[in-house]
Length: 115
Length: 115
Image (cartoon, rainbow over all chains, first blue to last red):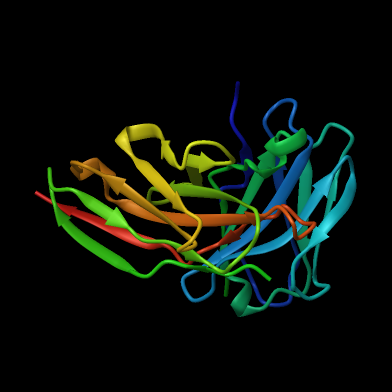
């Protein structure tokens, strides 16, 4: 099975712009989670989608949003970019069945740099 | 809310020596426990998991971990490390009783293997 894919892998944006990141989960996985990873804060949970519905949300401002499509692919959007948004954004997919909800399989990440 | 403490931010060790990476979590009745590894410029890869049953869990690449409920710990061990084990290691905990299975991650431990 192909793993989790994320596009683009690298992105450079300017303050005030917006950005959209994409994630394709492992085939058959219905849950997709997004994380922000920075040296200062570590791994922080953004949100999780299951069957096109946001099921869990972390403690991030409304500038961070996401969605999931019927094929389980997910996008996250960050509007009005700030310098502090520079980070590695990781997507993780999960089987979404019984205890296997808890197993997460990560993509390689999108490195976002805001200048 | 669950919290995860990885006691060592960095662990240097010589090749072929044993290593232990420590992880403690806040008290909970029932948890699922995970260790992930992250190589440079990559996403997180699941090393091993404890869901139930035997408290000694074996994972990939010769790693193992032991769940100790009384000490709320889940330390990762390897009897003989290789240069290729140099990476960042993350402990994660999902609180089964908390209603959300989204894992909480520790801040990570950088394992540095010297020749």
